[in-house]
Length: 335
Image 1 (tube, rainbow, N blue to C red):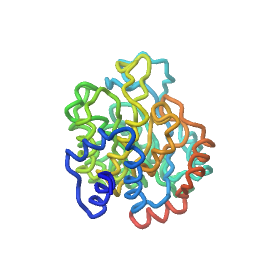
Image 2 (cartoon, one colour; image 1 turned 90 degrees about the vertical axis):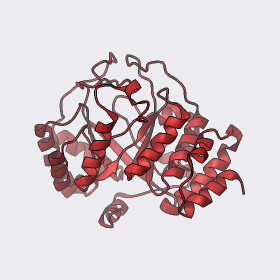
Image 3 (cartoon, rainbow, N blue to C red; image 1 turned 30 degrees about the vertical axis):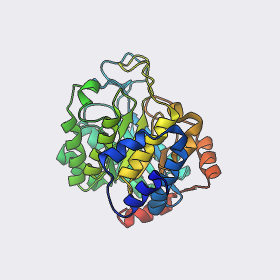
Image 4 (cartoon, rainbow, N blue to C red; image 1 turned 180 degrees about the horizontal axis):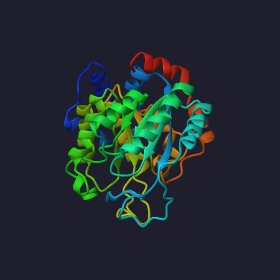
């Protein structure tokens, strides 16, 4: 048995790997990556079988953000040429949900730029979510920025199942990425959603000049947060942002990172998210031996892979899409 299989066995027996073992995953020799992915898949298979969860983003409000996040085309310091608009109308949110439902996508993600939502924006989202839940019953994830307790309660009452607020990077690296809010602000928002009874979704962006230890720290911090869903983004450096031109990642390193997050967070939804097309390139299918979830369609300000290509990729791998009906059953079971 190789060392990666031994790590998988350790995790499947309920143990947590050490920091040294976690670092060894990111330092895995390139020729051992197939063995590492095989080990990751043993864990993935235990908890999710061959099922893949599909997610779709609705960019409900674009740009106009006062924050100074270095990776983001929507920030106040970005000069990237993007569309900017205030919160879209309810009909647009409903049409997006219809499209997601028609594509058998289990989770519809309503995302809005900004530091945090106004009460008027919460009213708008709550109104739309109530109709979406009644019409389609799909899982709704909201991503609206820093959240107040009373806002979280209203979202929960309306039927929001999940709230996304990424930690993005490690606490040590946070000030290198943004100074307009703190790392603790992000942690508090995840906790606020949890306290309201909303499933927490929180992930990272890899490739922002962080160290391997930073990546390990991210994986353990999300474990301590008990995030149910962990999107793994890979930096897609956008011209006009402070991280313009940064290109640190290789496809094999991205696969090692996905394996790390699976092994540290064995029973959690691990999602290949933004930048997967740009960074994993032809190795995208291999990422699903660690991840069990992907976004379908475009992201916020960058394009994604064609939906037909994603479905073809899943079919070629022999994986099965978790249908909306299966997702409803899982919600009923509290999963």
